[in-house]
Amino acid sequence: MASTLALPGQPPGEPAPAPEESMRPRPSVAATVRRRLSAPMPQDGPSGWLGPLLVATVAGVLRFWQLGTPGDKVFDEVYYPSEGASLWEYGVEVKDGAPEYVVHPPLGKWVIGFGEQLFDGSFGWRFSTALLGTLAVFVLARAGRRLFRSTLLGCIAGLLLALDGLHVVMSRTGLLDSILMFFVLAAFACLLVDRDATRARLARALPERLGTAPGAAGPWLGARPWLLLAGAFLGAGCATKWSGAFYLAVFGLMSLLWSASARRAAGAARPYLAALRRDLPVAVVALGLVPVAVYLLSWTGWFLSPATEAYGRDWAETSPASGLGSLVPDALRSLWHYHAQAYEFHRNLRTKHAYQSNPWSWLVLGRPVAFWYPASISGCGSGSCSQAILALGTPALWWASVAALPVVAFRWLGQRDWRAGAILAGLAAGYLPWFNYQERTIFSFYAVVFVPFLALAVTMVLGMLLGPSPARAAAGRGHAASDAPFPAGAQGQEEAYGYDDAREAAAARRRTWGAAVVGAYLLIVVACFAYFWPIYSAQIIDQSDWAARMWFRSWI
Image (cartoon, rainbow, N blue to C red; front, side, top):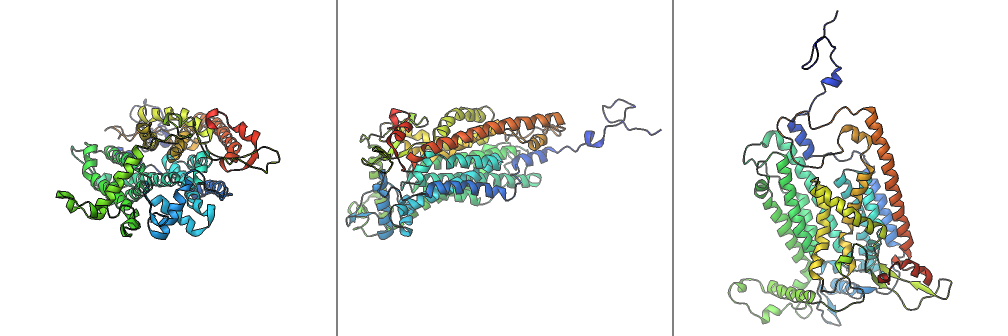
């Protein structure tokens, strides 16, 4: 009779379970920490690129179709296209042969002017914003893929942005805000890549270089090129509109907190001190010096132009400095004085405007801005026609975001989900500062800069409704949100093994119902966007059709 070997805790005389059930290899604590530091990206090959490209193609069609309509300048296009053309001709803003006083940095106008160098007329001065608006959809889809570790969710986020009315209108208009939006989103995407790259580097160093001894800080992580690129994009944002500085501050703090979180997960006893010692110097260069250099570089035309063409270029020559101020080059002193003048203009701008709004009303679409509404229109087949451009977000997205944001906030505060914190950081940096300027003349279309983060917030909730795929649920990888390391002695307890067929079937049913809910919501967004498309793209429609789309008096 064959003998059996009793395992610890097994009653004598009973056969040992199959090796695959009782002797399944358990990962070590170090292996678990490495896995949590470096979560794998979706292994979906070309679809990881083709999906975002397809969504971006849809966005491009919507943004470039009849882009030159209307041929007139709408809203603040009376300023920026002409200033952009002047920059490409003279290097500075010149009007009627004299230096022009302007209150925004030059980079965004250089971008608008680039399109004017390629194409004539209204298509030319809107080309660059349409291109960046299309690229923003692709960038968001890829960033969402990285954030959620799901190509599907990344594409959903990109699709929501592609179908947002405010984003479409701003992408089809030669204004600065959609350019700022692109630079901010590009910086966010770079920070996500940098986060993954630094955590992967820590994971590789874990067995040899890291420990849990008090004061262990871990290795220096190198130059971090993606962080440097993020700093360049944030500098470009500041060189487009000064409100980009809020993103520079918030994203800089977020990046440092991510570094501390990674070092804590890797076993550093004092992770915040470790981040200050190892990561702060690189952050100062990448998110301090690089943005300043990019910002000053955007003023190259002003620095190189004669005083007869560049506004305020000779101020320092007529206002000599004393003391330490004399050590500052005259050009920088003149630029500082110019900035002080522009800041006073912005701070004291209180001219009443029919379409100004309070930021409290932005998320609920309280007061959208009518960019264009000509007095006399014909061609709709009736005696009363309408043609309009209304900077209105797609209600199905914006109102859903109002419900989604508390859920995202709970995921951040209650469940320590870093992804929720990243989304809220992007929203806060673009939204909260405007509450400090409620007496200033401000408009709801400034919100376009944080529309990508609203799309991510809604996508996160949709992902919760959708649930993990059955394969992912079976692998036990659908729950990790915290970066906290596992305690000593936790070997074999950090993963749930042995999902049975019933549990996998339940996950499949949940996925089916979740997919139905998510699909139904996306169809509502598509239908809502299609309904408002005529007033996003200046289509000639019957007056009654326009009135039917004015759901509230404040939209008129």
